[in-house]
Image (cartoon, rainbow, N blue to C red):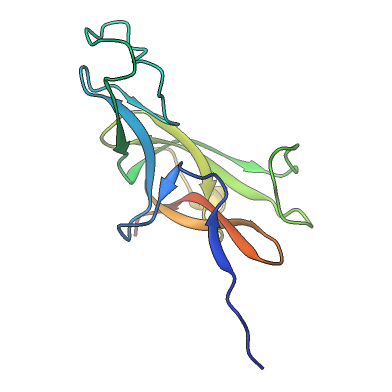
Amino acid sequence: MTTTAKKRLPAIEGWFTTESGDVRLLGTRCSSCGTPYFPRNELACRNPRCTGPKDGSELTEHALSGRGRIWSYADARYKPPAPYVSPDPFVPYTVAAVELDAEKMVVLGQVAPGHTVDDLEVGMEVELTEGVLYEDGEAEYTVWMWRPVK
């Protein structure tokens, strides 16, 4: 019996990459003042102290740091409403708000399967990984997830 592996596609195109072998969130950074944005900001730097041109030309693509510390976390016990896509039947999962090491901004994401709120604590170091959000007959749709650093 031959099994064909499903292709893996990002559930949200352009929000993260795995090209370098590491999972990295893709945002933008102001080249004038250094303010990072996630998700991407393509209009203009919103930092009121920025002295840059404020026409969008100051924003460049930026791969954010792949590690941070848990700022907050919770169980997700109820199926989120559309447009969120979840497996059927719904499987509860854990979410974590993580302050990125370099950018000092907080990014929300699921915690990798196998980790529950009992495994986490505020201040714990975590890193990005890729995980399957849902699948259909043709593909697995992936997102970034947090996992504790060993």
